[in-house]
Structures are given as C-alpha cells and as structure tokens.
Image (cartoon, rainbow, N blue to C red):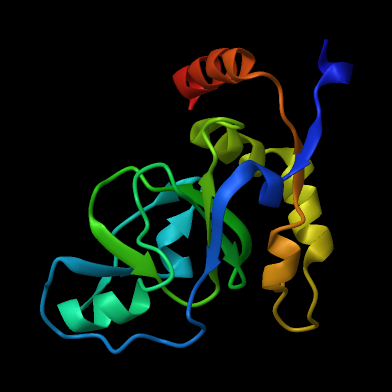
Length: 169
C-alpha cells in the first residue's frame, strides 16, 4: 500500500550527486566528440543537441573530473530556467555546463527512469520551485538540490510504473 512506501531524499537514493564546475568551459569553433550540456539544452524532459558547444579532449578531462555523465543520469537546471529535467539517453561524451546538477540513481533503491519521472512530477517540481530564490532570476543552491524528496515504492512497482509512463511519454 502506498502509505507504507518510504519518502526518501534524492541524496539517500543516489550514488552520486554532482554539480558543474561553476564556470564556463573554453569552447572551440569546430566539432569534437566532447560536448558541453548547458541549461538551454535541457527542456521538457529531454537533453537536445541544438546549439551544442564542443571542447577539446583536455578541457573535457578537466570538466569531468568530478564525474563523467552516463546513460541514465538525470540533469536538473538550477537556473535559467529553474527546474528543467532531462535524462541522458546516449553514450556521447558530454559534461555539465554551468547551473546544472547531475543525479546518478542507486539502482538498488530507485530505477533511474523512476527518479526521472518523479522529478518531472508535480510534487518534486513544487519542491524545486520552493527552493528557488532570487528577484531577477530564480535559482537553487546545490545543497538544496540534495534535499528533494519523493515517495519510493519497491523496485517491482517502479518497473511497472516506468513501463506505463514511458508508453505515454
């Protein structure tokens, strides 16, 4: 029964929560395999490559020293705008631009896709907006990005939920 399902913080449900380096990576004017994901690339549940900026291999190594994003990782825009969510669906060599936080779900606790849909939902979106502050542009502090909570059913219920929701998505 859903009343018995625990409410967890994303910090307790994730193996890793990483923010960007909080400065802009030096880009190159030619295509490379190393792509910077910016807040403008995360919209409506998707990470798109429109206007993607590229960097050298050396820059990529520096900007991924905290973590290399991989398939299934979830990205949250902390500003400009606040609260957009995307899930990494490729094996491209990407890294976080400014004002992004990456969540890597602990699959023993929560399926990445379930956490992704939970973060898109009204409950977590309301929490994100509540953590937002600023008079000109609303933004969220990194420590607050770890405090988001969600109801976490058993893995089998998560699997069924993800299957049903992904059919609609």
